[in-house]
Length: 167
Figure 1 (tube, helix red, strand yellow):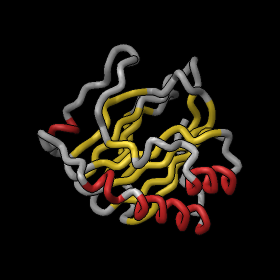
Figure 2 (cartoon, helix red, strand yellow):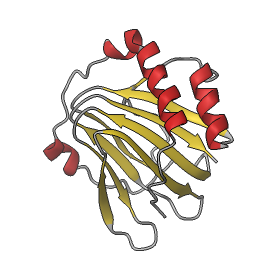
Figure 3 (cartoon, rainbow, N blue to C red):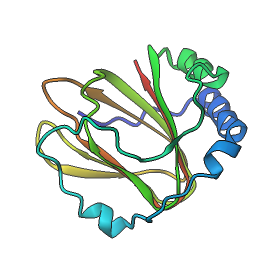
């Protein structure tokens, strides 16, 4: 189940913030061809089964999963691995998915420059929740298991950076 909001670790936000700055040339060029409004995002229906094909949602901040700031953040958080580092363009999102192919406790640090929302389905109750990002840094933690899919999706009105770790 979701969702805890663990306290932000200043060391982590400092090194990830530096990573955003260092990769600016990559992510700033990325724009969406068709803007996604919040109204259109809200109409997305939950799929009947997991979507195996990766859907476009953002641009990797770097192809280097061993970039020093990511390795440093992973170490500080005592995480096993880094699962992603993405930059979202304004008016974009990520479709419903479960990440059920990579089980474990997920920890996400996101940096948002405008309104953004993390939508999820409580696997125990089936209730859909919207958890709005704070402007600036937000941390979330939730469990990914094979037997209880954790459906979630994302929408943002402005630039949003997402860093995922497995503990």
